Length: 225
Image (cartoon, rainbow, N blue to C red; front, side, top):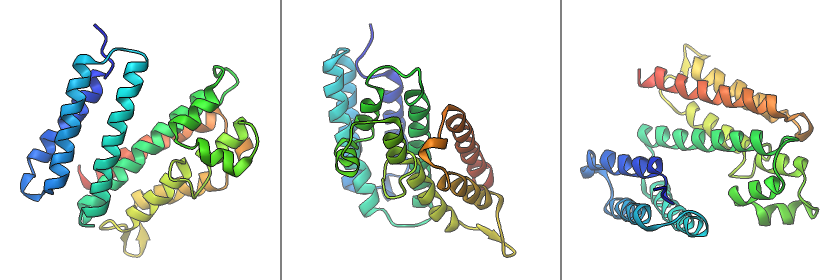
């Protein structure tokens, strides 16, 4: 039987609950309640929700609960090094997700409606309508979701925020020189910052995806290896 809520999503949420339980004494009561409410809802949906419109509505509920939990973390968590790792991880995940989506859904072989779907996924329908006042095109979607430095869903925005957080990590500078991690972060951010919508194609997105994955590995080897 296929479930409306994927097993992988359920495992990730349950993994988050397990991790939080190991630092229960340092986890806020509101955050703990929000995370457990999310897990309880996900388990219920996994058992009852059917594929199709029912699953879409269920995902909307889960997204809303996830946004609530993320808001608690952002507003209440003390800004120590652990918070920076958490933030960088979230930014990397969002950047990778958007890179993959744009790579698949802005090409010549993308299915009909792919551009409008991208705006829906990126929660940027109203922003696109307000900014461009034209019908959806590959260039306007690329400009908004890949290269807009002020759009919190764009790839460039994620890289700008990652650069800011990496700069604050211990040993970002060694003897006055950039660490390998910080240097790679700056290179990746600068490379994308000078791009234009016309230059963004499937090969660029594929290269960017590999670079973001390498950046994640470099972060792990530098501080967690």
